[in-house]
Image 1: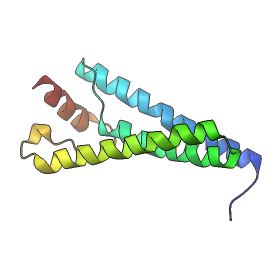
Image 2: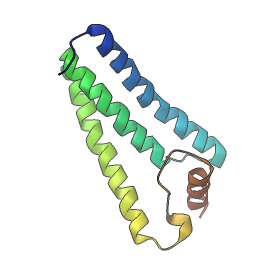
Image 3: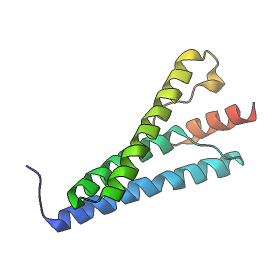
Length: 117
């Protein structure tokens, strides 16, 4: 059963926004490590998770602006994750395979190597 408690939904909204904002921090840190603008896989996962939570919040608030904005974004995030997965399947070269998971030294190093190539 879905709760109608506004305090719970406010917390859900802030959680979604925090996760959605964290994607920029992840991208910034990865770019600084590479000294080049890069977008790690984690950016897309955080976008999808944060966007989904914000979509649920917008649905509760019945806010058409947020609903449309987050709905459209979810298609982009899923499509980019599909593209990343497909690129990994086609590649036999280790420097082109971006490992799944949270942003870390292996993922960032792989991205930096790929951008430098």
